[in-house]
Image 1 (cartoon, rainbow, N blue to C red):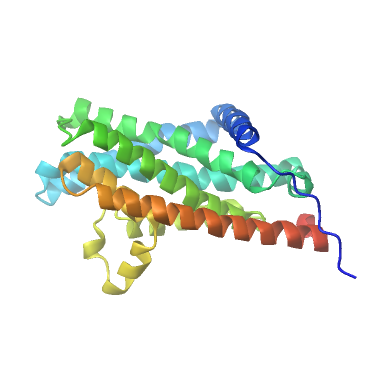
Image 2: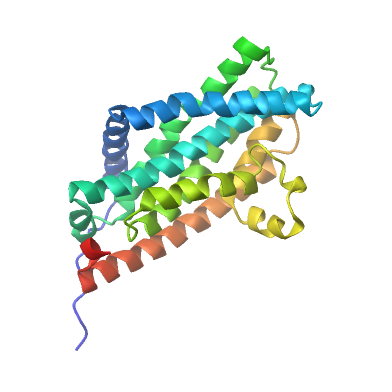
Length: 269
């Protein structure tokens, strides 16, 4: 006789949008009350932008300061997404609500997805901050090849960052030190995504890893939209790989929920 499956709430389109809206609003307000996350959101983009500007100038690439500003903005956004996702899961453990969230009928993905989306929205400040920083202090001209395409590519890139954060957040559920893993993954994924350093200068064996990251294609779409070049293919690849990562996150979260409910050891992990 098979074991009864736990009840999982079926979520329609209206219910999904409502959960997303409430979840994003809640986590944005929560992050706005955190001095650590606010400080990171304000300071990190400026530091990345300053380093990028001086490195590009020292390397004789002063004509590419706009791309450096965009890359630094994406770096700050990715740092916010990853650290925010790890911190959110860790906070649920500290507050003693992680077990309740996993046991609730609402799918766990609808609890974690608003977290990653809200961190991406908060992290989008990084792009505005680095562009403004570059204009005011370094005289970077905001001469986008196509401003409208740039905005569309940026939205696609933010979604790509969010879905990668969602997949990683699904593994954070079983980790007591989620922040430690998040911090260790920030720079490797940023490097492999070509946010500040082109992937062409990385070792040859790293190329296949970059090609399966939606963040790499999203970054390529944003940087080419700023400087001119093929944008449609990178955006399509970012969207397709993003959908694959969502499916992987759903499978991972289903395994997490099933294991946590059967073993009842989530609080001991």
